[in-house]
Length: 417
Image (cartoon, rainbow, N blue to C red; front, side, top):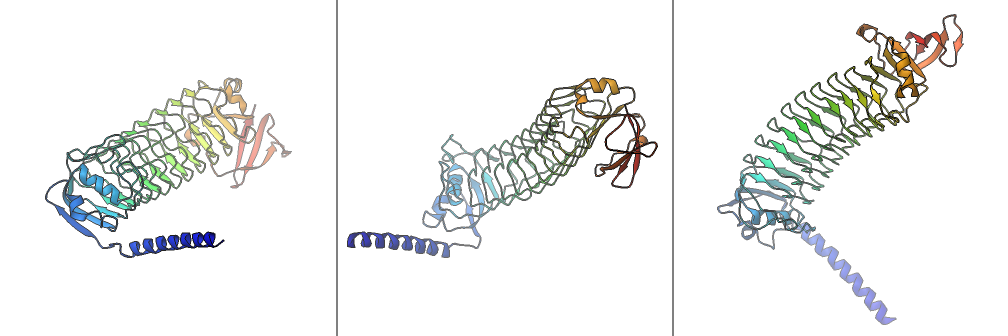
């Protein structure tokens, strides 16, 4: 019994000592900015030393940085050469007066990464969980893939004007990142570049960008708005998938197709503009957009993929402008409210649409697709009552002329065939 008590007592004392040691270490953290001028690349470890590297929280480096220096910076910022966590506390890193150069040791041994001139290489700061902000050197022309991936505390980062491409997974998993400025020099935003940046609320895509890769902003659950410039010709599949706070999006006329799952699970999306340049809406494009109320499909669209609008349970009106029925894969509208959603089709095309997959909907109504003034799209309006021309109250659409009253006070004549 005595032995057991002593053993428990020793364990308790060991834990307490560790707590005090941790407290003491944090008590002596250097919170003021430490500025170091490197006269020779590769000398940062000697300047700081192993006994001080975990105490520095704010560091500015002036001079050239190679792989040896970056390896040491990674350890200071929470991740070692193997990607394992360290006790580093480096939070603020100012490299505005530094320059990346080739040479030195590998900074990430998992795949053997070495520095190059004026490039932030792949995996450069991967997993550096202590970093909250980074000033990138103005000399940098390229940011490699996964360069800042899983920097979970990173809230801000500047991207210099010389950068032309943001690589795949560059900022993926930076869940504390709230905003980012993309310079006008960038032409390509790689796949998953900002995926799972769950705190990102808005993004400004400059007019220089031509390509938005697959899953670029997927999982950005706080993103409420996005402006896609007319320079963009390709929006990759699942580019905005899972952006559950996104309420509206404008697709420019430079885009010719809406790819697989581009806006899937954007559950707050209420409206979307599909330009007349789009010829194809691929499978799952708007799958799970349960708040989408109204959509216009231009006459340019010739095909709609499977499950393209599945789960859009809030849809109340679809305006289709094509006189030739777009080829539509079975299940394109699965989960939509077939009884309460009205499909408006060009005059003289009712039979063709009813005989196709569009016959899924109970209410197909012809309208004058050539006269824009006759088209009233009320995404917020909902039907409250329906009457025959003689004033009789109807419980469901009846063949002939129906008078439909909406909750915004408007009354519309509807021809049911």
